[in-house]
Image 1 (cartoon, rainbow, N blue to C red):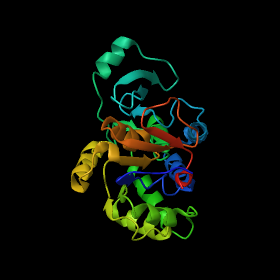
Image 2 (cartoon, rainbow, N blue to C red; image 1 turned 30 degrees about the horizontal axis):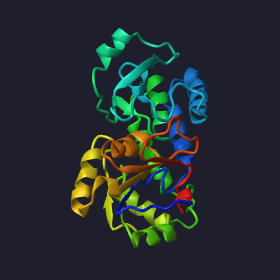
Image 3 (tube, rainbow, N blue to C red; image 1 turned 120 degrees about the vertical axis):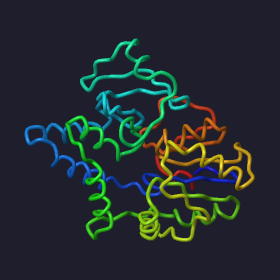
Image 4 (cartoon, helix red, strand yellow; image 1 turned 135 degrees about the horizontal axis):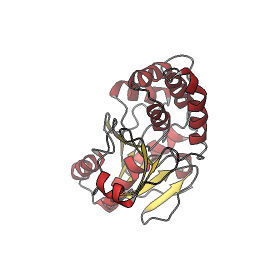
Length: 271
């Protein structure tokens, strides 16, 4: 149990306020069907290795779709420190500087930050030649509103958030669209909990700007704000760079100690 003493707390949704992974596997299976028959087994085998952290592609990396390269970045300044071909071969320093000079800007098509489980099957599918991943994403979203998909509520979460709200302003900031967010909050019994909800946030591209807007709106200092999420690039690194505190939800821990950063296996560790 830990105390959150902040005037403003910004929560992510997917992977933070619920923790299931069935939808990622469904997405992967849908993408697998688009891979050529002779490579479908290899596709899913590599995806399973990614989930276990036994593959070059992993949470925290960046995938360059056009060059089919897997990048290691400094999550604070967004400089690329190394780049590898799919087979693990490291590209030369000269190529690295030519391809990735300065801080990088991520998008959802070409230079993709692999911050959570959605992007593992995406990167794998792109490597195996799948051009259309979006229709599979939409199919997965449809699966998530069907009777076949169940989201488990985290015990005590609603009570924790309502208690936190008595002393802090709590905001939800997510890349999910408004319709999905409304449905998910209902299923999670979190309707009416957040006083401010930002949907379709397009993190990490707009994370800093949105945080700065919230700081101004709530008239707080950066050190009085905490960002809580499971995606280091989307929610944690931008917050730390602005002087916020951050709580990183990562069951496997984090490689290094960072000032103002707390790492927990689940949001339930916060209460």
